[in-house]
Image (tube, rainbow, N blue to C red; front, side, top):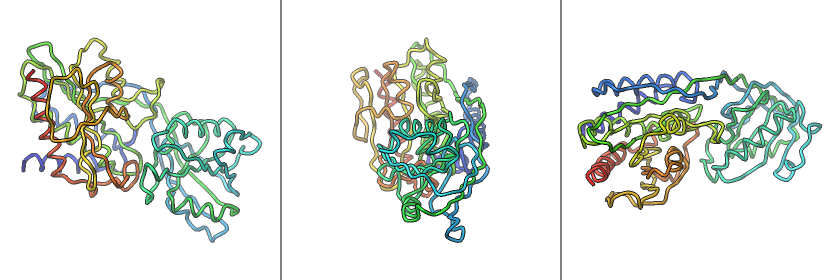
Length: 389
């Protein structure tokens, strides 16, 4: 256990070294290099980088100030993932959910829009659709409110809106603190400036394969990209650390099985059929592979959380035991891509009480490293049970 925890700690600090690991960033590429180096150091000779097209994002800086209050900085404000550059001043156009149903170009062209729209925290498509429509109507910038039912109230989620399809519009987000500030000063003049851009980017899945003697095959996965503007330690350096240790511990196990250890890029990308995530790209690239199961590690081992195992299509799996309670498939991450192909899925996950993921508060300090080690130990035991039958 001591060696396992030392390795997990090393992986976490190496992956979280960069200030951001979003698609197209230096941190994203550094994570790819690190994962490949670890695979090779473990003795894997079949290591590959599998490319697929996405949209990268470059962020320079942002300022958001209240011109009528001595240029006071709007609290809790950050850029949204895939925001374009913007520079706009004026009294914001305040748009409620009802207003959004009939918004016109005349109302928003060249303006700063404050979007009072709340939905389920996972409803990225809904907020993306709002941003794309405001962009089409000519809005200069839109400010969204981070959904406090899904994310922490202490910091804004940079993924609350994340459309890579914006043409010219800037997009920002405020936490609860910033939302109250804007509400109490809605007649003030504000200045928002964002230096950012999108660009065509080639993402890569980093894969190590241990070829087996038989025809049975399993894949173990975790995504290494993160939400912008933070370490993305829980979501999902924690899962990558588990994946790398699984590759170490299972290298010589179940010799009749072929094991694939796939580190996926672009899980934090906008999910729809035209913009595949890394796991979707992986399944598309290997249509003839017959996987017996997919084991996923995503957001594990936080302090103040409940550890669980989400299982999909359990009826296709042999009986097995785990220390964690079984819950139904979540279909909110990389398990979705494999479930579509009717592959049984197992997602090791922690349900956090403090919703710090997708915010700058998602740091290594939120993680209980011994519990991450327990996830790995249990996952090894589960894999042994599944491969023995």
